[in-house]
Length: 602
Image (cartoon, rainbow, N blue to C red; front, side):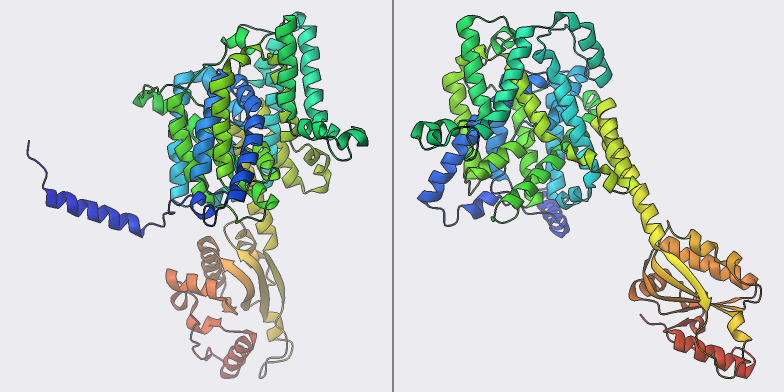
């Protein structure tokens, strides 16, 4: 076989680099590089302290999210370690913490149920590549255009599904098969209602109460007596996260008393005591074709969650705002790498990010330390995880689901327009009953339709008589023959009907129609076509159409499309109403159309 010409290869490479240089691609520059400028010992100690706190908080959540997603607990831990480190090291935010998130529970569980664990890993890798491309092509800002009603709708829907998925372990049930859909889960829970374990219910509810009340008990104005709050032991205990306290207390009680509840050891056999192995998933073209929808869902949800989380962090700190494109590229790298070590999809996590901010984090170093803390715990304390009761993890996740939802939005629905209410409630119900993909797709379609409707209502046509007296015309004659129509707003495809209906609304004596467009802020090609059709319709009725006061954007569109002087006539496109009156007066005096040619403004 003939070897390729090195000169041709170099030329092709040069052409490719030149083509890429012309694209508006985002540079790959992690925020860590900027954060380390002027970094000192004090900031290092502060970041290490924040990372230690976040690592302890992330431990139970990572295991709980993995179990709720239908995979082993170590998958959540490995995701928090690997993805958490990469997202902090390569991301576009100073303080964001990455890892497994509650929002992915329903998605991951459904993919595992329908396609299997191997295909979940493949779908996560493909979604990571898609996330990287979204950031590379500067699409990070587009995620912000998703209406808040859709975000609240699917967030509350996911919170409901998370809570529903935890009822199995909270009630102590162990069905042979748990469906992924809402109705199927309700049927399964009802079918096994006679197997409820009262001890599991009590333990789960106690863990839920402890996690909920723990921060309030140790607040400055909390439940503890003032005398206790001044002690050193109180301050040390107050720094412990509620989920860790619940796991330690109920895990120790389960091991010591041999309580008959399901544990990580009885369900999964424990957690591996060591680093994860590199595993190469089996890729196939046929399998990847089936994973298109799951891949897009993971990528879309990961982008939304990570950028929303970064925006929350920006509002809590005075640090430079995050770079959305760099954040998406970091999320992409993390989701490409993590599945090869048994991980699941990762994104920005609001609860851990807020904990990181409140712990005083100043740079991505805190997030990297949080991942190293989790790694150390896995290497040292993994054997102790066998005693962690699953009802306790269920109680922790119920607290996460409650804090995740914005339930006050339902109480405030009556204060908003019906379009907002329809989108929010519709997205919520579709998320719960069907899935997130359908909910977001339908929500976006509804949002676009309602937006088009609202924008079309802002465009209006106000008809009146031509103001003032036209010199040289018989008094009372021309004012009835000249119809002035003022256009307001934006003339686009959703509002052209108001222009198309104009000929039927004109008085029988009308001979001239003047469109005053000084308040027409914009016009699209459909709006321009509507004006052209209006001119043709009026011409058939021997009615003259005149345009005046056109702004820069409509004039530019008419010029670029070639529909200015040739279509409407230069004598019919005038700068203002004074020029219109002068043209009509000159025509009336001469008895014919003697109005001067007016140069169209560019």
